[in-house]
Amino acid sequence: YKNSLGDLAHSLKTPLAVALGVKKLPEQAVESLNQIDQIIQRQLKRASAGKTGWQAAIPLLPIIQKVANAMDKVYQHKQLSITIEATNKVAIKADETDIMEMVGNLLDNACKAANSTVLVTLINEGNWAVLTIDDDGPGIPSDKKQALLERGTRLDTYADGQGIGMALVSDLIAIYQGKLLIERAPIGGARFIVKFPV
Image (tube, rainbow, N blue to C red; front, top):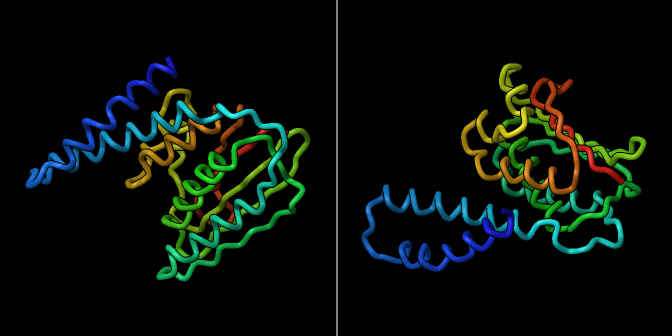
């Protein structure tokens, strides 16, 4: 099933690129084609995620720092305080690109929602590496939290502009046999907790 989806997405790439290259397309058509492109990119990502064998565990802190530095630049206008509390001892067996994609989407969403503060913590807890991302934004309503955690529910239903990204986060966590929890952050907004087996 997964391979078929990957093959289908791959074969759709070229005709879609040709369609997008047509001049004077109506705006609605371009919008729909771009949406199809995003779906295809997601399926290609799903098909390739987890394929490489991970021999050595990679430390998560350098990846988080790299993403946080990028977010600092992207959200410079908001003058956010992005704080990281972590040690370099937290490491998991995974593909660095996958982890960067996942952390990138979670941090991006936290920065979008935050009023002024984003707090990232990273710890080892028993047999798990635990990444927590808090923001001081409006938070996620309780009725939406449960829906997000139900099997098969897409993670992009609770807010605008978090479509493919949050769905991809859900896919990657599942591929690495991780867990996702959504809570209220002590600083007022949403708290996303991601746990990976170590």
